[in-house]
Image (cartoon, rainbow, N blue to C red; front, side, top):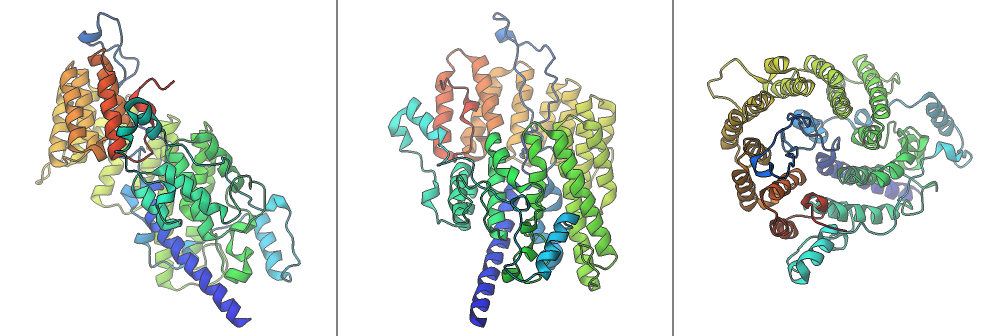
Length: 523
């Protein structure tokens, strides 16, 4: 009997180690995964006409200026780094701390004081997730290549599928690193089926572990990344706010004993709070995030008073206390950043500016971090159309011996765009690109400036040379959409260059790019 318990405990510890390793590697891809929010400095109502299109009366489409290479307004990882790496010394109990609702606390207390096997919960107090779709997600790039370019071109495609990697979390990481997000979703479905949480299992009881919840976090983050909204909404709904009793370690005393805390990672909690934003329910997302913020603040107070994060009166030593407070203050900043991204998606820029101001005052930021925050405030002022207020944050009046940074030059370029000085903006982006030649966002912005100054041919050439020089990094959806729109303005024979881009996608990218950005006739 003792040997069985020891074996069970060893398995449990191994699973936890794998889960921690998985979160360290995977969370950097999907932390606060958010729908695309690009700066729309050029007003869509402005009547800009190109001489090329004057005869047909067509209006110039609005091209996207990219502020950086992320798909979020403000990315927490750029400010805060990876939580697991930054706080690797933090005690697991403090990292997993969470304050359950009174109802959940009462149920967990009853379970802890009753004889094993004598307590049974109603279904409404259980978390019962499952897959909402059956089978694998289709690879649309492959089918489009076969349709337009034939089987010979398809043979040039060497992209991993779910069956080409090990059937575990390491295989998941391999697929994600290769940009094969659809294949990773397919593999996650297979792995979750092992936990009896596959297709058709929604509302069917099953057991949970940190590992299974990390698989769900990865899957839902991938679905968010690919904008699979219906599936995302259906599969995330059973988790609620991760407050059901079976989301806590103490629900499984045979595996975790009396260990306190939540089995779900903080990143998963934030993602679930944000999901309504992608489902056209941003106010609900904002409410969710403020509820998380309230609990995080209470946890910080508890640690500051020398107790455990959940408020239990267990004294902790000063070193652990300091690490725990630092960890949870970082998480509070991450929550603020999620609120900012949600506010931006609602076009509530005033709220975004207010939260950014509070963020600036809430932590000891490095000069680089503070510059990033001030830059974000300035860009929100640009969203509001308040150019003079934006200038106070975006233009650094203090000259540095080392010269302007890439961010400062980019901000100057955005200011110039706000003043309709596209030639000046081009020079700023060009100077920034000289400091960071691999920054695709800067080259894209240079091309957009050329477009708005009537230099269509030069813009197309710049896009094409960028893709030729670095196809893996350059073949991003907003860039592809911009260049395909440029082709349509440049010539009536635009299908051939679009097919060349399709060929490039086929050879250099995974399965995650939305093929519709090539604007090919797919019906």
